[in-house]
Length: 135
Image 1 (tube, rainbow, N blue to C red):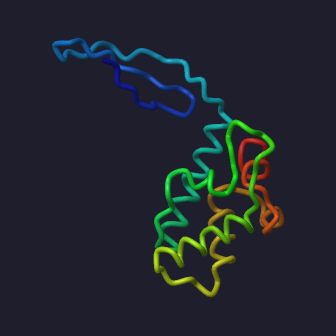
Image 2 (image 1 turned 30 degrees about the vertical axis):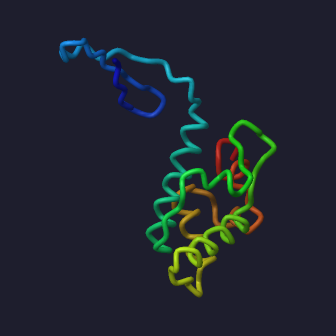
């Protein structure tokens, strides 16, 4: 049996466990995940946590699939406008209060999480291409 931990971005390490439970030395494991994918994952994870806190909703796992985003298909993407509508739908489904200033809230979340310039953030900003690994 092997366990894995992330030591730092882009470098995973593993600890081999013998049947008697004794641990062996930590060994570097090459990660097939690119730095761009890691950046994308970290930005989207940060955005998800911030949305959950700000809007008081639970964003389901696989939310990107509900917006038609596939990490394997470079052509699939969604806009922040579509993501905003998705968040508002979550608020209604989960009986959370829909803030009157929902777009400015999401705007600040994207700005803080992604580091994009304010001028780059619009309802037409694409999640994968503009914010993620292509951005």
